[in-house]
Image (cartoon, rainbow, N blue to C red):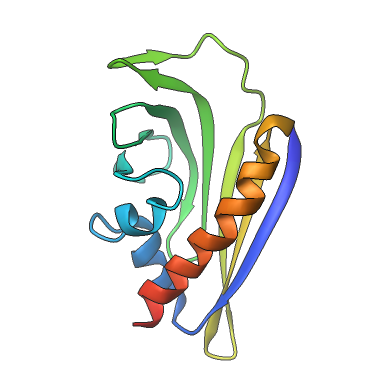
Length: 141
């Protein structure tokens, strides 16, 4: 696993950015950068399961490791979801995706920390900046 980090300063409160990141209506808008038709099935509570799905119903099985409202959420990816079934038989190691929101001068600094396999680094370095731009656009409008 490789560690990668992305940051974006957003001209909105942490509460607004949080709502955009996790909101039922806004989540599919900014995650479409990764896969058109993206959705999530979770209540975002610590310990809860989360299914992150593409427009075809395939994706990742994950667990919410931590949720400190408007400040921090940690997601651990556990395996794949394909053809309506969970596949947790692979060793995904410490595949974490962490979101940290910090208030700074009336704005929010959103930091994304990821542990990803080397095969996915190029993709993440291309798509995350675009996704953060979309989060900012939604939060600032």
